Amino acid sequence: MTRFLRSTALALAPIMTPAISFADVPNVATDIAPVHGLAAMVLGDLGEPALIIEQGDSPHHFSMRPSQARALSNADLVLWVGEGLSPQLHDPIETLAETAHVIELSNLPGIEILESRTSAMFDQDDDHDDHDDHDDHDDHDDHDDHDDHDDHDDHGSEDKHDDHAGEEEHHDHDDHAEGADHDDHDAHADADDHHHHHHDGPDYHMWLSPDIAQIWVKAIAAELSEIDPANAEVYRQNATNAVARLEEAREQARVTLAPLHDVRLAVAHDAYQYYDHSFDLNIVGAISDVDDAAPGPARLAELKAEFTKLAPACFIAEPGFDIRLLQAATEGTTTPKVVEVSPIGAGIPLGQDFYPTLITGTATTLAGCVD
Image (tube, rainbow, N blue to C red; front, side, top):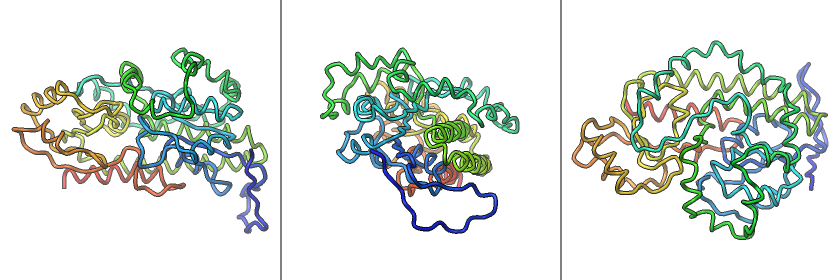
């Protein structure tokens, strides 16, 4: 079903502003708030994307609600990070959005994918050896290859979701779908295999990289232009403006975070590897793993043994974090300062300002570690 956005009158636009057509603007459904924010920047005044995973829910384990199912059913374009982040979205997308264009953002070309970390403590030498390469972003030409998304014939195969589903060997949709109860997704929320089988693969918290966000913005604009050619120039111009805002946010965050380069940080949930990698931070360990599974005794013992030698100066908690886990990991050591950040941007108003605010607001909060 296509939603029609109608306007009885259009405000006078500045000269050279692309003409806007409100008829048949695609319905866009997004998985998480950061993706929603990027899609909102590209849509601009043409429309507002739907959000599937609400800001207070974890993308790693959530239950589908009827309103979220309707958003998928109505979608002309579905944007999601991928099954590695939210496996319980796989079946609903297959069944409810079977006629929609689907972009699994983690599969787009040009993304530097980081591997998940399996231990509680991180090897900082490995993590930071090449951070200097990220300090100089003047050489940003490699992103220009995505401006026109010229290689969109390959991406176009995603328009037919069956073709897209078969692109990745680890996405065996037929096997996954067989016997699945699409009306009850609660079983996915607590299934241990979904919590752990991605540990040896990519880290899917890649939205916290502003450079990756730029790639996503350009891909979203290219796909919307293909679906809605009448507004193609609007999408392209919005994407250009969005990239400029992302650059500005990245530079602002880099300045804010400069004093933290040598400050030992620990996190509640190993969700910040891309942010760490982008801004040359010194995150040394995490209470919960990349899938946000509850830490076991062995993990807490590993953290405690290392923190006894050299405790972190600051701890990055998330909303709802059980502070007793930090107390167990740092027992007998200096208690670190605690700041609270949501890697998914809980509490940030949805809309076109969401993503820049996520990047700069996270930086401002972390800067409190050295106040």
